[in-house]
Amino acid sequence: MQAISHLWGILLEPQSSWAALKEKTHWWLPLVAVLVFGVLMNWLYYQSVDSEWLVQQMVAANESLTPEQRHQQQQVLTGDMMMYGAIGGTLIGMPIILAIFALYYFLVGKIVGTEQSFGQWYGFVCWTMIPVLVSFLISILLIVVSDDGQISVDVMQPTSINYLLTNFPMGHPWQGIASQVSLLMLWQLFIGIVGYKVWTERSTATSTIIVILPTVLIYGIWALVVAL
Image (spheres, one colour):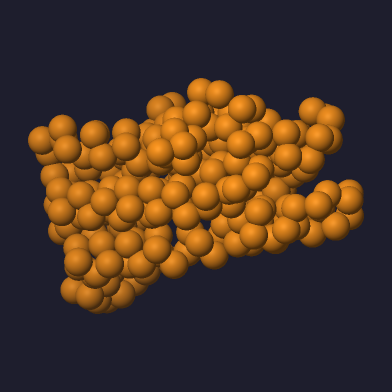
């Protein structure tokens, strides 16, 4: 029960939760929660969306395709294929991405002299994913209350810049990055900064730099590629 209490404690009282999690990370709990609700969100979306409409939107967004290639893609792509691809990407891709971030913290720890193991850092990055769980819950609610099969894929990123502000259409150069940058990302970074400071006893400035550096590099390079 104490581990479960950290699911909301990490959002509301991150400092005390991180102090408790330093002793035992219970990494499986946030990971399972995020995977389960991530799969549920994708399943509900592809069960609710008009798959024929969605395929047309996706094919039309790729301007490089010839008319013959467009026709072939419309014949090949199905709602079930997209759903299984999204679910598989969640179940396989997310643990791998978390492992990459854990490796980053582990290697940085070797440089700055922190004592945490790779396993501890894996638990750390799993717990920083709790704001994503909130995003999944919001998406599920939006999908359930929708009465129109023409549901934009951006509904699965309900706090993103694109969903809230820009509304770039599918295929727009900035649609991808605008759909990934979100308000909950800032919350996620804040939780990570607090956690890093509690776990390593480093300064706020050092913790901030270490935690936000991967995000700044990833989205900075992505934005530069789009701009060029």
